[in-house]
Image 1 (tube, helix red, strand yellow):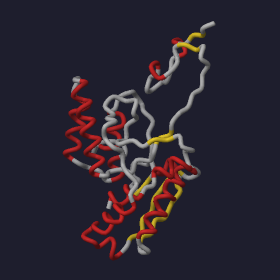
Image 2: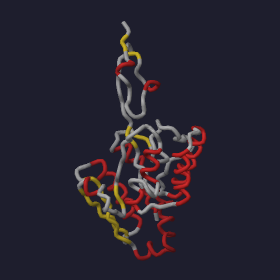
Image 3: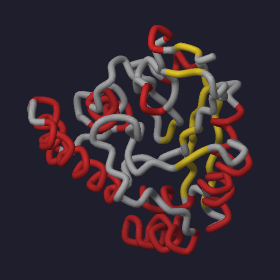
Image 4: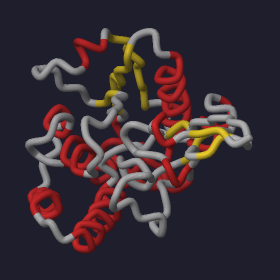
Length: 229
């Protein structure tokens, strides 16, 4: 059933209409600028025929036969979050008249309350420190911040994450995070909403600014910038 929802999310439409073409899909919940992101892994794809096939197979066909009603929560007042779920709702409900997705706007404090568990919720994360573990452990580990709220507990995945966060061998960490990306994509643990692309315009006489000077957590340091004549 998770794969049904993943394939039913129309990311290209979201990028075109919500992000005005300035967005990109990720293959795992980790920014591309962080250690361990593997560009060789294809992101999740939008495919309604594939989504319907997974829906029909879920729970040995019982979900397709009996239908379901699902509440999907998002931060009240966030139009981008609401629109993402509206896109998903439209595609899921179009598959089968017995499928119903109710969108529920909630206060952010209620959504992130440790006692709150949602069948589906739109969440996001900003890094506390520039290391992939701050994203990977947060979303995917049994003892992470978001995983318990979604009932996610996968011992095999936990073992990969634990090794990645404990080794000082950078090459091994890169290898492990690539494995984690492929594993979690195959398991369809999350729908990956496209991330927005930041655009910064600057004059050609400004030195010390650009992608090669960018810190994945803090951006560009003012002290490194200077102007040419």
